[in-house]
Amino acid sequence: MNTQEKQISASEALNKLKAGNKTYIDSTKNVGDISPEIRMYTSKNGQHPYAVIVSCSDSRVIPESIFSAGIGELFVIRVAGNVVDNFQLGSIEYAVEHLGAHLVVVLGHTGCGAVGAAHGDNSGYLKHITDEIKRAIGNETDAVRAGMLNVNNSVAKVKKLFTDADTLVIGAMYHTDSGVVDFDIS
Image 1 (cartoon, rainbow, N blue to C red):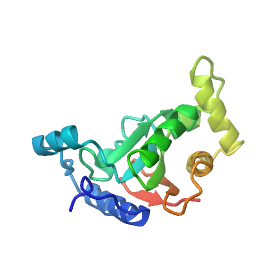
Image 2: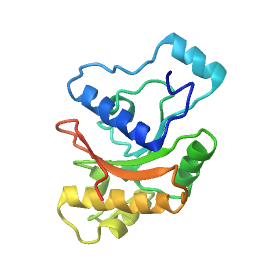
Image 3: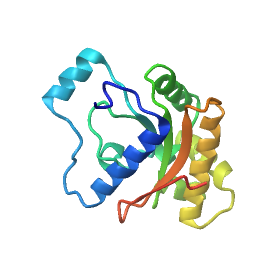
Image 4: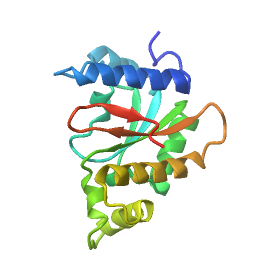
C-alpha cells in the first residue's frame, strides 16, 4: 500500500526518509514516482504527503530528490535559510491538520549562503531573513554549527504548534558534498 492510500506514523515516515536518502546517495537519477498514473491519482484523490520538509531555497537542496520521493509524497516548504515565520507555520499547520502528515523536518544544509550572510550588513527584504538567522546563531562563526543552530531555532518554533504525540518535529542537516542527511541534530 503506498502513502497515497494510508497515512503513516511519524516513525514510519522518518524511516522512509532515511531509506530514500540512502538510495539518493548512490543515484544518478530521481527514483521517485513521477509517472502519469501518480499525477492522475493525486489529481483525482488529492495529496497525502507522509512528511513536511522545510528546507532552504538553495538550488542544490532538492528534498524530493534527496529523499527519493515522488509526486504527492512530501509537502515541501522552501525559503532561504530555512527560516520559519507565520507563512511557513501556516503551511506546516495545513499539512499536518488537513493533509495528515505526522512528521515535520526542518532541513538545513552545509554551505548555506543565507546563514553566511547573517554576519554581513544586509538591507531590503533579505534583512528579514538574515536578522532571523542572526538571532538564532548569535556570534557563532563555524558554518556547520551556525547552520545547526539556525535549524534548531526553526524546529523550536514549529514544536510550539504541536503538543500531540502523533506529530514529530525534528531538525536535519544535508551535506551538499556527500548527499548524506544527518537527522535529529539537536
